[in-house]
Length: 75
Length: 501
Image 1 (tube, each protein chain N blue to C red):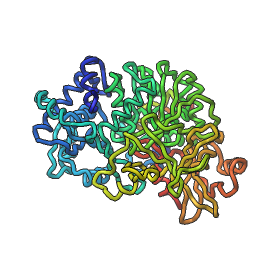
Image 2 (cartoon, rainbow over the protein chains, first blue to last red):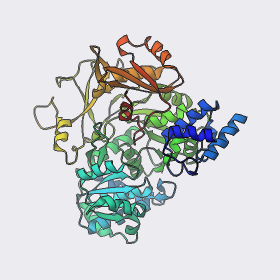
Image 3 (cartoon, chains in turn red, purple):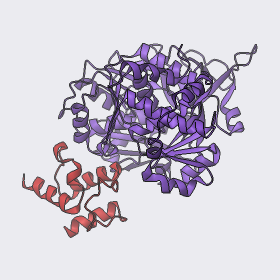
């Protein structure tokens, strides 16, 4: 999880990823950021995020992102 | 006789009273409600004795934004839509030029608006809804509006960063509406999925066609444009059949692989405008929806959104650009060479437009107006204005208009005249390229290419050498994870330029 936060900080260093739980709904993440996060995940974790997982709920918090990555790695 | 945009609403509010006109996440607004609320807004403006005055609208993108626009129009005033997501610096520049006499806002933003409104009267929508409309007063105000009066002033981004307020009359919009309805399958059964912001000229198609035909517009939540699956499901669930979007939004769906995943059984008409649509991604859409009508629209805000169009009726190869076709039936196009003479057959020239949808100019900017809105150089007999778009075009072998490049993107490099658009077309056609944008770093005399896609820069260079002359091969090639986008959802060229190093 710490590693993921570090990687996210490289994309947006102005967001407190540890505490945010509504990153999408609050408008904190722009579509530009989400595309970058998806690219980062496929590069760092070697998993492709399918359309079905590309939903706001998976991007609202670090926990949700982490859970999605783990699920994709297990598949 | 239809004289003003509100005359459309007078008719549809009768014929389609209980039908949904506009819908957002919070509300479905019927045509009857739209008219009633617009008249309530108008009543307040009339009471303040405002007539032919600028009214700023500061709201989220919501159904009530449309009734606020129509309220300004019913009262004989004209509106400028500001967006709550706009940077404050931009809003201040706009207000300095527009000098509005009233600002319409919602409770949510009353305080924010108060901080920049100065002495300008602020009207809070929810408060206006507590008193009934004075229909007699509204009818009297409306009766004084003629078709040449201003409907809205729309501020364009402007490459210099100074927004310019384009002045558009009721007549300009009515001619645009009538042409659209005659040319395309737009009617009471149309269900729009609105992508474009309300301060952007393209949104006028969704809004005014809905009001004209008794159609329905769904205001798609901004968030959906980050999540293609969510977006496609939204379109499907709401039975949306018509899209008029910027190419970047259509490309996002194609590039993320969402097209084969989710079918849109209701889709019947897709049109795009605002920037060049990459052919490869359009072909992905066309393959998936062979029976849907696709059209490319072209035009600047100054000509009320569209002055040329092309209906995709033949196969276009991935390495070919999509034509902008021919002039709209209500407009005329001149292609002028550097001596202001008609460009010869197949020659590149500047596209200039004339016709009833021509804007009056830029609000409170006589010099900028005089530079772009000029006397038709081919007409020496009487005063007639044309608008110089700054876009370079030519006719192809089929007699179709082709967009070549912005005049500002035509560069002189190593002694050659080069259109950056031509390089972009070549790059976009390569396999595995999702988006490409080409710029010129004049300080270092280098062509710089930015792209997204799973392809190495060396391979791009090798493959471009097969299709472009040596002097057109980009000197620097940068791979990006994503393209910066401006407020309208188009590629932000200024932000890319800022990355030169």
